[in-house]
Length: 140
Image (cartoon, rainbow, N blue to C red):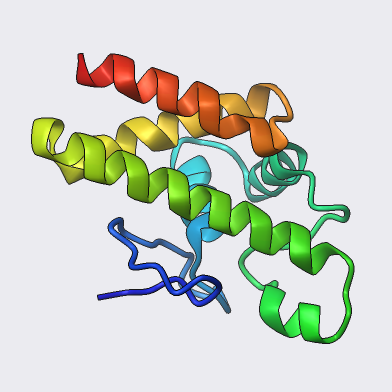
């Protein structure tokens, strides 16, 4: 079973990344969902940056936050925080909704909600509440 390298928590969802990606993370998973939905690489990267506000624009497919943190790069903590928040949201919703609608449907719905919110408005740490509220509505 996959585990989050930052907090050690088991991951209950599918991680995705482009073929040439140097990392696979919740951020690369959302990035891939954005590109698959029709956003360009640049628009997907900008949307993630705007959504999670990690100080400077980084390429989530190449950025290694733990190594960058050890090198005292300022954006590293923000990128790690964004990844942990995404992992927690994904894990919570997968655990809650998979028995009702299946893993693939949960992952797709969550990706669509996050993409819509990241593209439309910067959310930062406030993204968890609205996404969980929408997921509860899906369950009902």
